[in-house]
Image (cartoon, rainbow, N blue to C red):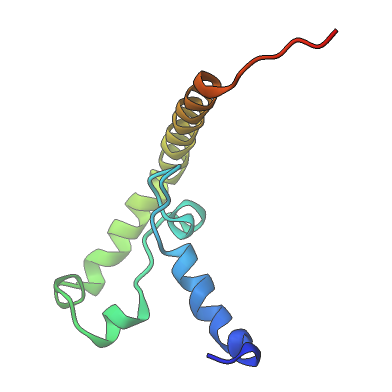
Length: 102
């Protein structure tokens, strides 16, 4: 890739970032915002078990159910993120040398 071609790659990188599970929350940013998982374009082209078992009639009902749990889903992600931050803080604080200046 040349230096001028990065603009063309940006949408793909952005999509990959939004649809990748994050360690801090254990969730995808896309699912936290919209309340359901995204389907990556490659999974639409190459049919997976998920795409083959797609049922349009049942999908609306499942989507409504997922939207009912969206707030709970976000709260659980926030709890996991806070736990992760506490763990990182504890790790950092063990290794810090405290110094007192006069």
